[in-house]
Image (cartoon, rainbow over all chains, first blue to last red; front, top):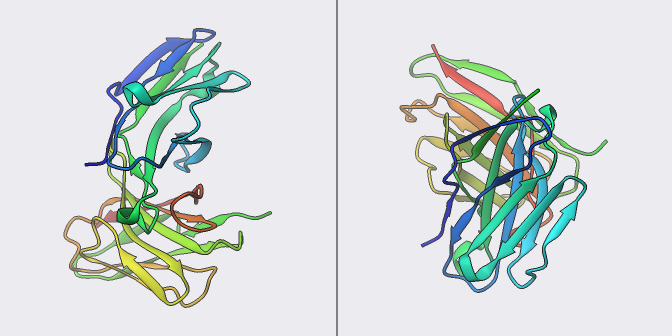
Length: 118
Length: 113
């Protein structure tokens, strides 16, 4: 079965703290894609990153970094030196590449609401 | 500027009424999707379309209908058969399906009067 679990429903930090959002996934496919999206209060989902299952390199983009570990089926997201503008709901999502997912459906976790206080 | 537009931003539905949510994209994407988001939950797929004049049911298609007469447009109709339509509806598009990244519109919030 395919599933994405974001166990942290809400996280609250003070500005400049580092914070890690956890994502654990289950899939039957050997080839799949993992995504992180940000949903600010306005509601629109903003794409942050995509990783392919065959590329386990970690990624850093400014204050954002992602740690992909196939051995633990995890794709965690870290924000360094958090800012108030980082306050949003963050979603992890999975798309399987096999014949069961011809349509490219995204399986979403339930989201983690991050609140960064000044 | 390329992007995805959804209208209206808020929509109110009366009992027994069908309502249509608009989704337009000028990204020249082949695939388009409709997702539903309920409070405190992730998104669930309603319908998707990989090409003009073709569309497929997602996980929660009951009570909804779609059409894809033009590449740029993928309207969603919430019919009276959908007994719990109050939700946030998000439209997305991608170059193709599966491996491509989906980009989302700003969403439509549907409320029942």
